[in-house]
Length: 323
Image 1 (cartoon, rainbow, N blue to C red):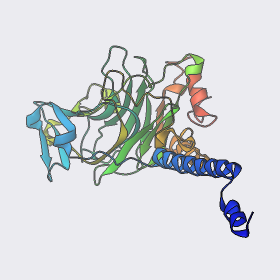
Image 2 (cartoon, rainbow, N blue to C red):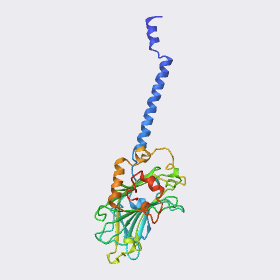
Image 3 (cartoon, rainbow, N blue to C red):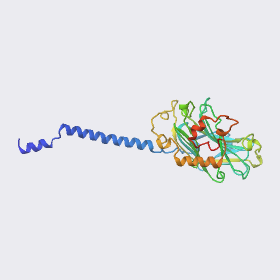
Image 4 (tube, rainbow, N blue to C red):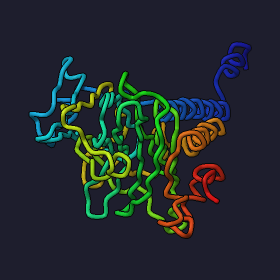
């Protein structure tokens, strides 16, 4: 064999080298694909905010609503003739739902501004924010509640630590398969944990619309109904803007892909499956300083502490007032 032939032979890749090259190439391609999948899973999707006229429908008393600022702002109006309300056109199953709201100013006693998600089914799921009006100078009360498979009566009430009538504040929920976190200005005020392994229903099977309404609740809303609505202060107006629907839209009867068990959305990632220590401290701060009612500690209503209260608390939530 000549030197030239020897060099040519050495330059030809062996079968083993070909195989090794293919393996390395396949590994590189796999790593690239995996990185793309992880990036897609952890990346927050672009939130929906196409304007109230595009994303919501007026469901009650259109003549008591106003949409302005090119569809970016909506007002709900309550007077002696009627309240008003709206709902989202889409249903959602899991995600982050937020909206900026400025509540009724001055003497709002007797009024209720409700902002909630509901499946509107016989055994419905529902996540509630209810803002209970006050007489001038008194703190607004925020009541939250959770319905799962038709069972509710899980009210908690807090005094808001700011005046919610002078500026907009953000109210929302982070909802995934593991927990539901109620948030005010991104501060967690309540967590409801999935306890299905203990036989308790959890809202994870029924897509929900977003609703809001303003109405007269003076039979119970302010000081247990002792203070009535003063209609000389009407109209009462709640204003909405800057909603953020970073959630899975349930498009069909099987609400795919929302119900897929694969952790393919940012809210399915491990960091959102439980409150961090810092978030637990914030919930404890709200409970210790601003909570005025907790169904968990209402011994007349619940002589035995509901197990979910202990389980949801993780040792902190709702237990500060249990004796």
